[in-house]
Length: 92
Image 1 (cartoon, one colour):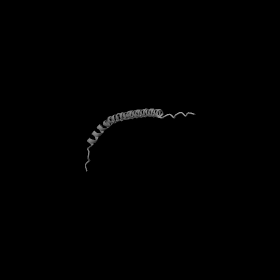
Image 2 (tube, rainbow, N blue to C red; image 1 turned 120 degrees about the vertical axis):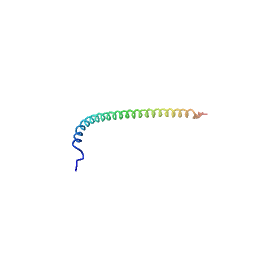
Image 3 (cartoon, rainbow, N blue to C red; image 1 turned 90 degrees about the vertical axis):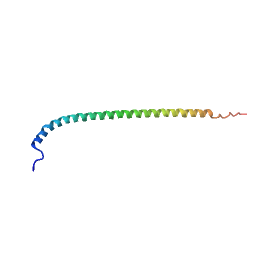
Image 4 (cartoon, rainbow, N blue to C red; image 1 turned 30 degrees about the vertical axis):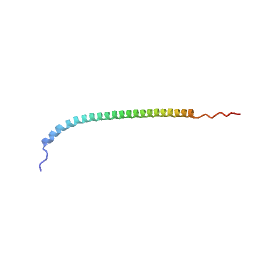
């Protein structure tokens, strides 16, 4: 049974692979660190956008409540003006 790979092939692989792995590992670590930073920045931006949306929704709700209160007060004032006043009783 003959070996599948010759010694020469093994030596070539041992000469080439370690530097490739060393360079590649450094690039992988740099890429991974960039991915972590990007993910953190995106998460922070998303949280800021959600807070802004919540603030706008609360502001919109407050304005709607103020408009409704003004409408109800106007209706109440109009109802007071429309009500006929009871005639004054004379003591004769």
